[in-house]
Length: 218
Image (tube, rainbow, N blue to C red):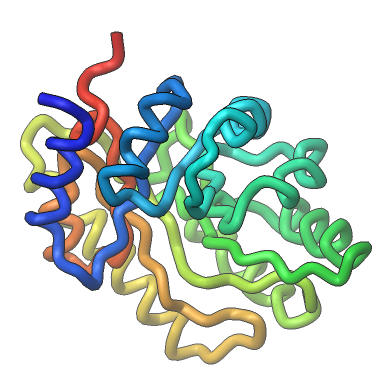
């Protein structure tokens, strides 16, 4: 099955009000171009340098998202490449983004990445530290939080991921009702190739799909 055929099949299954972000780590620029031609409009990359050379080679228009952990020394370059930073995970990073964005009077859209299961092997802010991050956002004039991004543990049985998706949705709703300045909860990014159906059932508004679009990595 071609990338175009996979995209067509996927878009028929996913509701129109849910955004598909193609996860393109270690995929080629030609594969990305093929996905965009088939109807994908959002591209997610894990590494700043990889995104830079891919954007130089992909002529088709798309929105580019930073999905991977963003190091503070990569922020300046990232702000020139990405339309949305999905991996805001610390006060230090938030302040760095705001400071660099202020230099060019840029307003940066971000999602807060929450380590929803507290896994040591994954990035994302701990739930216990989230309140402290939210408290500083009203003074960061060049940063806008648009929602949350989460990645639950991988389970062969997709149903085991459901409690983590429920917790993320509850957290999303709680933050939305708090009416924090510079925070507008519109995007709940959760669900990947193996569990996107469960994620959407639990309120996801954006899914990050790699294998289901591009096939298994060679």
